[in-house]
Image (cartoon, rainbow, N blue to C red; front, side, top):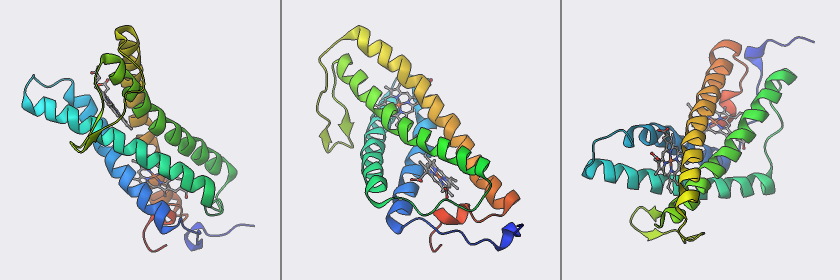
Amino acid sequence: MSVAPQTYQQQGYSTIAKSLHWIVALCVIAIVPIGIMMGRLPDGNFKNNLFEFHKSLGALVLMLMTVRLIYRIVHGVPPEPKIPAFYRFAGNVTHWALYAMLLATPMVAWIGYNAFGVRVPFFGLFELPALVGKNDALSETLFAFHRAMGIGVGVLMAMHIGAALFHYFIRKDGVLQRMLPGS
Ligand code: HEM
Ligand code: HEM
């Protein structure tokens, strides 16, 4: 049976799921270029502030993603979009990879920072507890992982945004609308 994709109505995400998606999306769209830029800046106040902002934003992403994962497990998601199985599969793989990476990347940095001997700040309000004691070798390894994982998040994000635009402009199948207000 063939149905004109333009006429398809897809069932959307809940308001809470959409709000969490867009707040996290804004944070991650900012955090990746900040992470790449900050290490390459000359020493000074601006660089230090950007590092502090990157760490706090990362801590916020970790908290929001934890809430989001629990919300997803408890409340589920709308029925899968009515699109060919291959696209559904590719979407599911990318979404789960994003969940995993958006939890693991800040977690690795948090432990790496504690192993470096400092705590992670949260916008000057409080600090996250230390999870491990000082250990220079561990800190170096975890930061090497964190840098690679941060770039991995950037790649996944680009694929994900590319796919959303592909669904909207080329397939016109209503998938993007599932995450937009009012759907
Ligand atoms: C979702 C959360 C996060 C993402 C996507 C992310 C992403 C990145 C990226 C892309 C880089 C640059 C990699 C490079 O230039 O090769 C970076 C560097 C860095 N990030 Fe994050 N980050 C996150 C959370 C955090 C957190 C929570 C902390 C601190 C606790 C942190 C601390 C750092 C530090 C210190 C660097 C510089 C490492 C170095 O130059 O050795 N990040 N991050
Ligand atoms: C212009 C930017 C973005 C657009 C247009 C967009 C669009 C979408 C859409 C339409 C969905 C639902 C797909 C479906 O119906 O199955 C979705 C899900 C998702 N998006 Fe985005 N997104 C954007 C940015 C981001 C960013 C920056 C991140 C994080 C790095 C992100 C993470 C996720 C995750 C994890 C899901 C799965 C949600 C779930 O099923 O629980 N998105 N996005």
